[in-house]
Amino acid sequence: MSPHLPPFVVEAPYSTAPRMVRYQGPLLNIPPKQAYLEAKKVELAKLGSDLFAQVSNPEMPKLIELAAKSLNLAHSESIHSIQDLALCLEEDVAILQEDILSAICFCFPSSWVPAKRIGMPLGQIHSPVADGQRLVAASSKIAHVMSDPEQGSFRRYVWTLTNSPLLSQHPTHKNPMPPKNIEDLFYRVETQTTLPLQSSLGRASLFMVKVEVCPLGVFWSNLDQRQRIYDSISSMSSAVLEYKNLQEIKNIIIESYRQTA
Image (cartoon, rainbow, N blue to C red):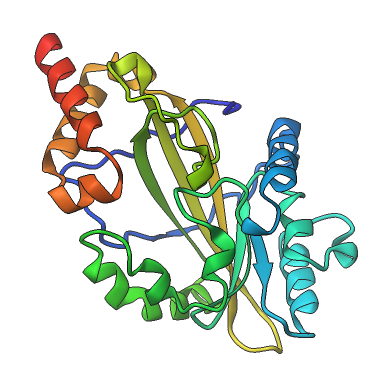
């Protein structure tokens, strides 16, 4: 249901190293596509408090309202919960205070339950990532830089392949049917953008994730993109393949690549 073709951000060789770069472009797609907002409402109705949480702190509504004002959202004074904020945007959202996850509403998570991460430091959140030692080690510094007003916004991309066309990859949404060929596969990318929040409540940052999905065939038909997908998948360690559930998908990629080489 992506409104346009997702960015092709496949890197070869594959790396889990943090690669956030300074970003000065538009933070949001304004106005948000109604299809995204409706899809979020559907997920919230189905999965409820699995998808959102915020720490029990009387100052949190002020911080969430500050995030809305920082994004120049209309009626920001009426936005007090993290799900209110998420339902104004195509992006999923989270707020970190220093490196602690203080509020989150991810309607389209990637194989995890967002509410279970509330109150965790960023390093602990990143700890399950396969081959993610550098990411975990850098997490505290990343959070510090994200919340520095002088640094501005940062952006990074995270991509994967899946057998599901759904925006949400919540654990309950897994497609039980094993893929058999390229036509059964989909390219999924998260565009992750940060925004420091200048607050009297201490250092904080807004973390936004735009999820897009399209059939893998859109890129597989391009020779250069096909080569990069093949090279990236081939370079992944067994730990990364298991973590991203790509073991069988790798076999499909290799076989299809050989047939078209």
